[in-house]
Length: 355
Image 1 (cartoon, helix red, strand yellow):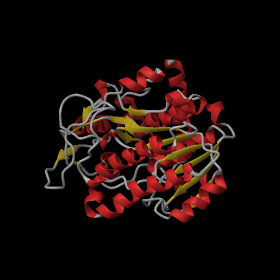
Image 2: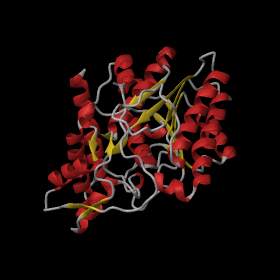
Image 3: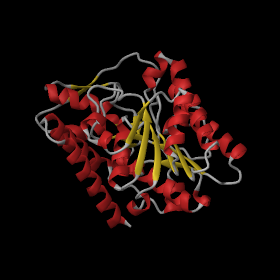
Image 4: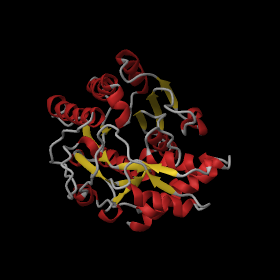
């Protein structure tokens, strides 16, 4: 677990702060008292979680493209961060088939430019590059992937994140062998949570269909994914960045995923959603000839559990309950930021009880 007091008054630079995961992480940092500078494009969807919050009033928000080297350098130099989280990305598999060049430019060269900022900085002590469970060469087998398994994502998104990992590894060995900056990567599973409005994602599809009183259409109901609430990996990111800041020996490469029992099929996930949403909402399967997407993917999280004593806080069933809770608040036009704060506090309370 991470310690809130550690982040108080720390200067933190966060790329991708206007995205779904980025907004939740920014909220956690602000609640912890950190001095946050965010660098990101405009929020990627309308509506979006970032503009539903007051975060822009509580951080230094720089709207810019991670591919814009000069603008990124200037924002970084002004911020003089001690801790850096890299979340900016083109994150959608299907979009990566439509525009692979943009995907590689953003996910690979964006990582290079940020690492160049860190290389030329004399303030950074801890850097975490957030990638994905899809960085692995997926053999569609029943075992969870371990950190030593080959990195070779299939589609342009997954492969570009594999490349982002390799860039990070090279910079770490080539320019930070003196360990003046602790560098780690974190490979998380499929995150779910309130405020995700992205295309081609199952939970946003569920909420939109339920809101309209329509059947939920599920493309790949039998695909197995490591689904987890967004707060699970974010809390782990904060923990890794803190611990390696204090002790460089904690720097490394970590999977962050749910326990084995919570690696479920998309159909099972939607069943839970229907159970908690109620109102007679139903789903149906619809086969389609879309681009290749993984059917079976799990992570082995033994390393992060052994090194940090980490363990998941909310199982997938409780995660779905929290997603529906947030979504009902949103659909009713109520204060979603208050719901975010309450869920973060609830998560932290249970995390402390589990120690």
